[in-house]
Image 1 (cartoon, rainbow, N blue to C red):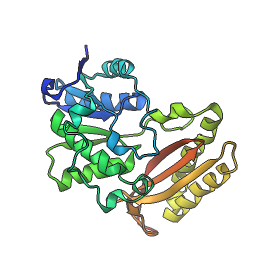
Image 2: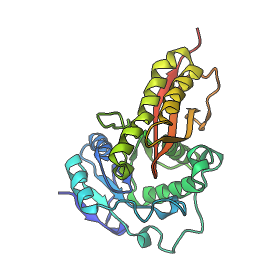
Image 3: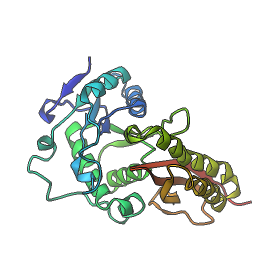
Image 4: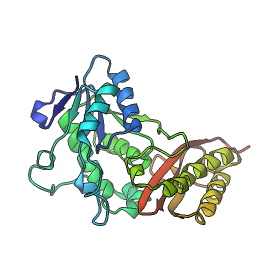
Length: 281
């Protein structure tokens, strides 16, 4: 049976950890199952903490779904040994921390430009939770590509003794990437939101023709979706070098991330797919 723990003093070191803000869904379950497979007989800890530091003043902290009982059940079914659900006073015992992790220039692009301070807050809580759970490996979804890239960079740059493991994005049957925020979408908004994954898949189909073709194909789908009801209002569509989250050059070779962010109604959604570009013929 999965143990529910609220205080770090009651935690034993984890073989693997999955960090969440709760409202768990099948995407989180895939992370937990990957952690379980990797940990073997070791302890798998799932953290559930809605981190106030990574929400801006006009974002959805107050209405972010909190479903702890259901989260514990899902975590147990997926193979977690412990759910660590600390309060804010446990994670930030002195109130908002005066010393924080800075995401630097890499955290000011794309999601960072749209959500100033978000990645500083995210990295600060990830660093604290890594210290509190003491895992050998930590598992994160590829859906939050910039978050994943920044955590990897933090662990490398600041010499954290933990392995960061990426797990592929889980999608609904219609292609929509699983997200806790999907529950905010009305039926018509959900139909419009499918354009995000369609754009990415169109870009992937065109990727053999090079980076520019991939971007053009994805943009064409978003342009069409701008006329939907309700419309898809893009924040950005970009082809990104995952090493530092700068724009991939026109002649880029190697791994890349095709990423999109858009608003549908009042809900802001993000999605991405990894691509690989070879040398031009």
